[in-house]
Image (cartoon, rainbow, N blue to C red; front, side, top):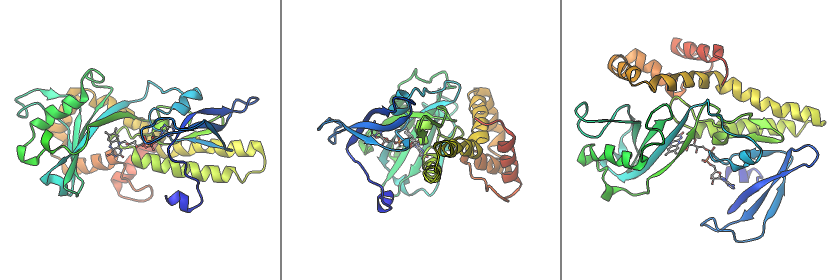
Length: 316
Ligand SMILES: Cc1cc2nc3c(=O)[nH]c(=O)nc-3n(C[C@H](O)[C@H](O)[C@H](O)COP(=O)(O)OP(=O)(O)OC[C@H]3O[C@@H](n4cnc5c(N)ncnc54)[C@H](O)[C@@H]3O)c2cc1C
C-alpha cells in the first residue's frame, strides 16, 4: 500500500505463469500472468506485462527463477519451519522464548526430539509457537513436522494452553532457504529478492528483514540503472546489486554456514548449552551474532569483533 501511494501499480489476484524473453539476448523483458480468484483458480485470459527490469520476489519456490534456469544450490543450508497459534495466557510475554532442546516428555528423562522451538506472545490473546529443523539434522525430511510440533507441545505445561482445542490456526510450514542458496542475484534482466534469492539468515531462520532490505536495495539499484543512458552502463549498475548484497550479508552468511554445520553435531550443541548458556557475557555476544544485531559503525568490542569477522570471512 505504501508503494502504491508512491505510484506503484499493484496487480492483485494475478498469478505469474512464466517469463517473457527477448529472442535475441535471452534476457527477461516481462512476464505472462493469469487472473485468478481467491482460491487460485484461473478466471480469465492470460495477460502479458513488459518491464525494463524484472524482480523475482516470489518466495522460496520461485518458479520464475527456475524458469530462468536458476536452480538452488545444495551446498547452502536449508531449513524447514512449522508454526501455528494457540489461545494462551502467554500471549503477552514480552520476550521471545527459544527452545534449544525439545523433549517428548520430562527433560533429560525422555527422548530428545530433533529441531529447535520458539514461543512468542502476539498480544491478541494468542501465542505464535513453532519449530524449525536444519538439513544438517538426520531427521530432516524424514519426520512429520506437524506431529513433531504436537508431540513437543503436548509435554509443555497444561496451563500454557498449547493443546488442540486452543489452536486458532492451521499448522503451516515451509522451507527456509538460507545463506544465498540461489545465485546470481542479478542475471539476464532479473533481480532476486528475499527467499527467491535464498536470503534467510542461517543463524536464526529469520527472513522477513532480509526480504525487505534486499527489496530496498534492489529498488535503489533499479532506480539508478534506469537513469543510465546506455545499455552497458545500465547493466553495470544492475550488476552492482550482486556486490551490494555480498558486501552486506556475504561474510556473515558464510559464518552462518559454519555455525549451522557445528550445531548439527549434537555433541557441540550439548557442550554449548551446558557451558555456554550460563555465561552472560558469552550469551550477549551470541545474541548479537545470531540476531544480527551489531552496530555497523562504532559499537562496542563485541560489535567490532563480529563485524570484523564478517568482513574477513569469504563471501557466501
Ligand atoms: C513457519 C515459518 C515461520 C517463520 N517465522 C519467521 C519469523 O518469525 N521471522 C522472520 O523473519 N522470518 C520467518 N520466517 C521466514 C519468512 O517467512 C520468509 O523468509 C519471508 O516471508 C520471505 O519473504 P519473501 O517476500 O521473500 O517471500 P514470501 O513471503 O514467500 O512471499 C512471496 C510472495 O510471492 C507470491 N507468489 C509466489 N509465486 C507467485 C506467482 N507465480 N505469481 C504471483 N505471486 C506469486 C506468494 O503468494 C507470496 O505472497 C518463517 C518461515 C516459516 C515457514
